[in-house]
Amino acid sequence: RMDLPKEEIDAVVFLVQYHLNMSDISQRRDLSDQALIADFASLFEHPDLLRMLYVLTYADLSAVTRTAWTAWKGYLLRELYEKTFDALTPKSTNAADVAREDIQELIAHTGDQFSYKQLTNHLNNMPPRYPSQNSAQEVTQHLRLIENLGKEPVGISVAPSGLFSEIIICTHDKPFRLSEICGVLATNNINIFSAQAYTRRDGIVIDVFQVTSPENTPEISQDLQKGIEHTLIEVFREKVHVDDLFAKYQQRWSRRRQPTIPISTEVTSDNEASEEYTILDITTQDGIGLLYTLTRALSKLGLDIYTARIGTQADRAVDAFYIRKNGKKITDPNDIQQISEQLTQSL
Image (cartoon, rainbow, N blue to C red; front, side, top):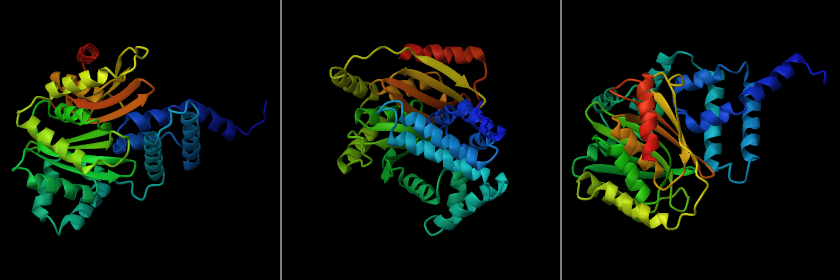
C-alpha cells in the first residue's frame, strides 16, 4: 500500500525477522569463534544491511528500560558488528593463511623476550583457537605467568581494558579449578562478565576474566588484587576451602538482599552454533555468586568449561557456557536432560 520498492520491503522484512538475533548472539555467544562470525555474516547480502540491523538492535535494546542498556552490552554489540563487517569485506578468505599470519605476528612480537622454541612449544600445547583469540601482548603476558609458576601455585595479572579489567589467572589444572576461581572472585565482590579457559596439554591452565570492581568501575585496586591472589594461594594449597568462604559470604549478603519475584530456571542446549562445543543457555534467578554455583554444578557432572558469557536482565540471569565432556560435544538427549536436571536442582 505504501508503494515501496521491493528491495526496501525485503530489507524491512529482514530487519524485523532478525532484530533480536544480533542482540542474542552478541551477549550469549563467543565472538572470538570465527565460524560463528562467518555464519552470522552469511545472513547479509551487503554491509548496508548489517549497518541497518546494528542501528535497529541498538535502538531496540536502549528503548526497553533505563537499565536494559549497559555499556557492556554496547561493547559486545559493537564487537559483533565490527567482526561481521570485516567478514563481509575480507582481506583474505583463506583460513590457513590467516592462522599462519597470526602465528608469525606472535613470533615477531615475542622474539625479544621468549625464544622461538618457547613460543612454538606454548602454541603447540594450546588449543587451535588460541592464536587467533589472543594478541601478541596477551600471549607474552601468559608466557610470563607460566614462567613464574612454581614458587606459588598461581600467577595472576590484572590490567584495565576499556570498560573492564582483565584478570588472567595461571595455575595447574585440577577438578573444580575454574569454580574455585569463580568462588574466590565472588567472595571479593568482583563482577564477572565473561570467562575464557585455556588448558595446555601439560596441565597448565590460563583463565581469562573480563570483570569490574565492587563499585562497578574498571579499576581493581592493588589491595584487592593482593587479597584475591592471597585467597587463591590459600585455596589451592588447601588451607581453606572455597565452599566455606562462599557460605560465609552468602550468609552475610543474603541478609541485605531484597526479595524479588521468583524466576524459574530454564536450560537449553545448542549443538549447531559451535563446531567444537555444546552450548548451554541458562536462564534463572540472578543471585549471589551465581557463576560459582553454576561452574561448580557443571564440574560435578564431569564437564569441561571453555567459555562462559554472563548476562543479566533485571533480576534474571542469562548465561551461556561452552562445554565438552571427555573432549567431545554432548549429543545424547539423555545426557542433556540429566545436565538440565542437575543444574536446576543446584539452583
